[in-house]
Image (cartoon, rainbow, N blue to C red; front, side, top):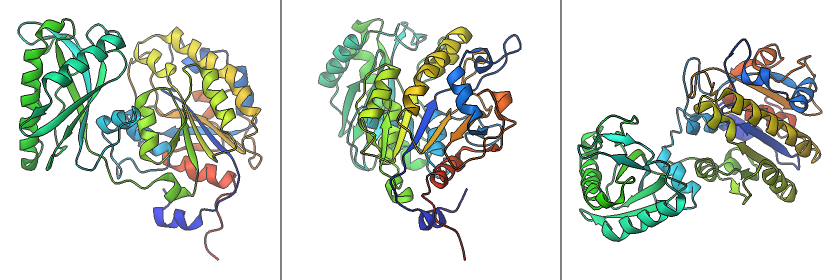
Length: 401
């Protein structure tokens, strides 16, 4: 990665439009000889790959399986080992909360437990969002404060919510209060440093109170908390790259990530075409756009190979709509691989294509893992994508005499 201070000194401002399309969980593994990308009928992506330069990117490093947070940070040009962001902060910012440096956040699930505290369902049967809102309001009324610390709970979709602890001296060096597997007993959090012990005690006292008052709310009769985190000190994309960046996504966590690096979050509908229409209607106002498509990742985590193939084919259909806007630079890639074979994120590199009028097409004919590994870009770290986009947008001046 180019040293941050050198990159800042090279960046220029102009009107070039950069678009980054992130297909969540893009990469896969062969099932009956072919990956999801190799199985899918994606003529538009294949055609675009033939006019682009291609390669493979490692989200973090060789062999490291990334979470969505660090893998997106890398795509946005940040070193994920230097700028670590917790899940709680991402979720909180994603639903539009304003946080202070003192606030401690966590992502929560409503869950089903038996009388012995054994988790029967970590997602409480994916309760309806309306029921989630009802329970959150009940909890907010019942448990407003613990040991002098204010507690606020905000509903998300289905079983998910965000919790914010507000008080002085709170620390985020805590383990997850979630065993992340059915069949295990619920657990509290443990402090990872002596300084965090008081915070761990506050969280555990909160969990005890919640367990008592939620007894009547089966199947959502317990909460699981993970991703304890506070707002990190991170420079914006405008500071680092002199960009006017905007984000178009439908899931709160990705919107939270975008806000954290200074992107303007654009309101959009739920469909792929809605997202492209949002891009079109704001195309003159910004010079960097991040478009996120989620369903490929969800299908991979479900282990549904065919569903992931269908999701790829649906995304392929909107590629011409993006090209009609004539972006100066277009990148299509993924934040990480989610092979249906593994039902989870994985360490495998993702294919990437970069299209601009200042490239030499490298002969790749299909947008697949095995084809892209033959491309001009080779295999490289995801953090290098942003400098490549800036260069192809003529947003970097010469280095040295």
